[in-house]
Length: 152
Image 1 (spheres, one colour):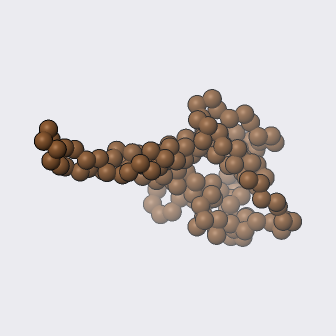
Image 2 (image 1 turned 180 degrees about the vertical axis):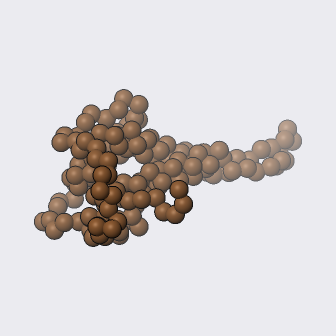
């Protein structure tokens, strides 16, 4: 399929672009969750924190669906991997190798840099699907609501 991937009708409605000619009349509808489910067991501590943040946000926007939970978990894992890799890199991003006499042989980037870069790229791809990136949010208009307190 060429061109941009189609947007779900719910996102079109939120963005204000739900013109009749742009809506599929028999679009697949999936089960929206009334309650936030327990997180998957494979999430690390950082992944669990991200799970709580994302599922609460998607649930509040009525965008948390049963079929999306695996993608949400994948996003949480990728963000956790990114943060864990960046914590390791706080001690330096370059590996230096010396010979027996102490002379520098070579310098290379630590493997955690590629791991962090790949994890962030994967997380951003998933996040854009849910409207979680700043640029994706600019295309979505929320219904009028009262101010919500920031929970940290």
